[in-house]
Image (cartoon, rainbow, N blue to C red; front, side, top):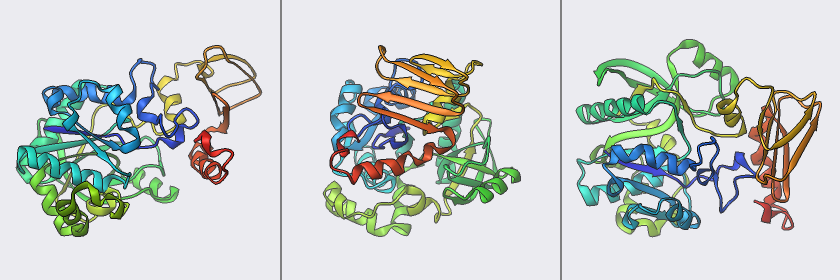
Length: 349
């Protein structure tokens, strides 16, 4: 398998720690000392057979940061998008480049740079199952996560007919993809037991992906085949889910058995590091009547003092302090739009 890391995301919901030049994937958020990108690369090296088999696709303004974080990555394995156009162009271009080098029978795996994986052994077993499924069925295999609550922040995958066991993992046809439903729909999905969260991980032979893109997104793939990445500014901004996975009949799913989190916002860090104490403290903190709070400062000398807070996130980074109720962390993106519209504050993005 040729693993490709998708490392062009902004990680806006981790603002103010995550900034334009220092996005989430460059940060250490789980206490290991490794950035999310470095941890993702490390867990995929065995799959890739070493650095020569690992690829990364990222945005132009992040390319130097990727090189600094992954100095052993061969330069020719770093694909740099002139501007981000979401995951469909990224998957299409990377698939074309891998197919040119290794042939269309090559099997690719696409992995976001911001996942936390609990068990590497189970992760590798699942990837092998997905690769066997994708090659034997000439399919696009995806991994799904059993929902632990009715999230409106994830897409959902409905399991269809069981197609068998691959590497001791049960595999299914996909009935449908549903992108980020409202709460009532999410609750129905979770209650049914037939839906998993879409983790954004895909495994497939290059030939299958290219054929499906020609069928369902011909303008995208033909532009890239003809003009290469120079056509990026004219490409539609589309996720691979919208462009292809909601339309193809080649989609199969492998439910995962390992612990997983996409570290999507500050609440994910709270889930990951909660150790039974009243709060998660990633700074010097003095609290009075404060519980279920997440406190973070990027400066070890800063002191955060709280009184009477509950279910709150407090983040201090440089000139910015963020205070937000945990249930409102999704609204950080709305605040960033306000900052972007103010010339005096946009430098803080």
